[in-house]
Amino acid sequence: MQRQVVHEQWEQDRAAFHELVTAATVEDLRRPSRGTRWTNQQLLFHLLFGYQVVRALLVLVRAFGRLPDPISRIFAWSLNSATGLFHILNYWGSCGGGLLTPRLMDAWFDHIIAALHRSLDRASDAELARGMHFPTRWDPFFRDHMTLADVYRYPAKHFAFHRAQLTLGSAGI
Figure 1 (tube, rainbow, N blue to C red):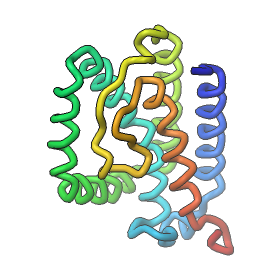
Figure 2: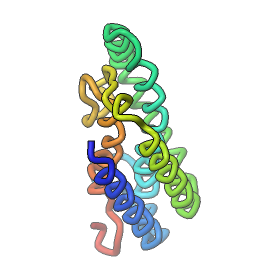
Figure 3: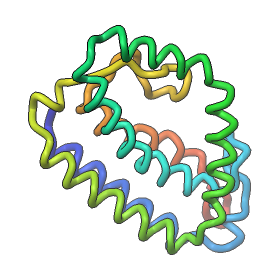
């Protein structure tokens, strides 16, 4: 894993998030996003939350990565069976999170990125190679088996995908 590439991508996403939040007007934030049921403000929270959830995923991979493979396979299967509930919670969570002010989201994003930088810098190569099975029905970027290194790369993919759904700016692009 090229750690510096991951660090740089996170910094690009952090700068983009700052730019999006700073440039957005109240009208922009209230506008519906493209291809989702969220407003732009709710989708901005979802972008942030994609990075936040990585902190929990890191704990899971570190734990399950030390256990026999069938245990994480069963865990992923059970989570896949609850996909409907996950999607409901994911939707309503971002609706609620979208009530946060853009300024607070911006500060939170900085905090998350800083924590992820420290975490990646502390991770050993052996830890980065450990992995577990994931609920592939929860997110298009989850693969059946992901290593800790894969999880560190995940939020940038999630960010890029959803960023394209924002309709910010006077033309709604």
